[in-house]
View 1 (spheres, helix red, strand yellow):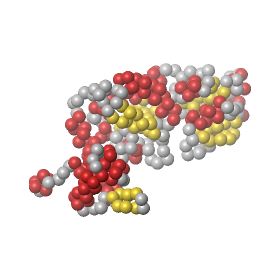
View 2 (tube, rainbow, N blue to C red):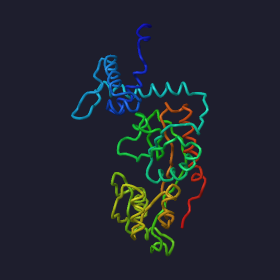
View 3 (cartoon, one colour):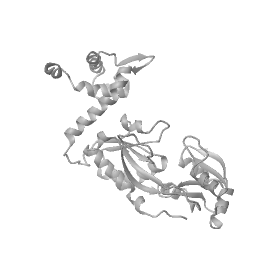
View 4 (cartoon, rainbow, N blue to C red):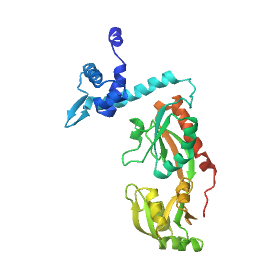
Length: 311
């Protein structure tokens, strides 16, 4: 057993992880700064070590075998933990840090985060790159498990058992209309809100939500004429029409202000919006990941403390 362990080249795991990320020998070679022939030889060694083809040709591309898919997450987690072991106890020198961090968030949170911390990062951590991905239709916890994202910043209602979750701020929905809209001429009532034409935001195309339930509780129903995939699309439509939209007051503030929209308090009881940060436990003690979580935490701190404005 000792001889077998000594014969294992753990560098093959690094190459395997990159090959399965890219599903391309050429792309993997580029990432690892190797020549294509050298990467091909490495793939051959991996195939021998695993007694499996790992990647097979499918048309013009390559696809992983079932065995490769089965071990990919385990390999990625092992490598992440190994890097964390070497990094534990080290302080992060932000000025010298060269790393890409990926966040999954909706468009309003992405905008707020970008405005709040990217200018600061350009000054204090010029080697850091931030990728902001939209929420997808798939189960969002998968992006943390498979390493697609480092963080999720969203409403986290049913996280995977292993996901670490930290509350960041509580937001509330407000009614959003163009300046000079008839609804701005007097205090908003449930009846006036129900009598307007509405646009909703839903990446799944849903036409109903908590506002409809609150209206139904007082015997009212609204007319929704459009569902838009992002808040930005919905609010641009609101700015160009008499349609009425809703948006989170705090995290929607940058876009609402940019479009010069008016906000009105919703005269009904709606559940608060709890925004949290989620990450995979393999990133718990990694100094760079901990530093980045602090940047996100700080970026949203002002929104957590400020009272939502209406105007």
